[in-house]
Image (tube, rainbow, N blue to C red; front, side, top):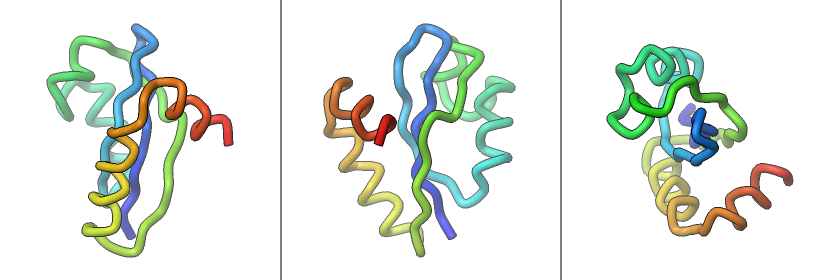
Length: 79
């Protein structure tokens, strides 16, 4: 299983990524070890995630979400 996720950073910005271990990835983000972007915007909160069967599907979906504007991402988060 792979996951696509959206984090809300302390500055209210949104970060999208993918992982095979959602819990560990969230811990890595909050410890400042996962990405340069989130490192300076701690703490982060998981606000959305999807499950995918494999890495390729997850990466394709991550790319799709990254193409959305902020309003569209917020609409996705709200369901």
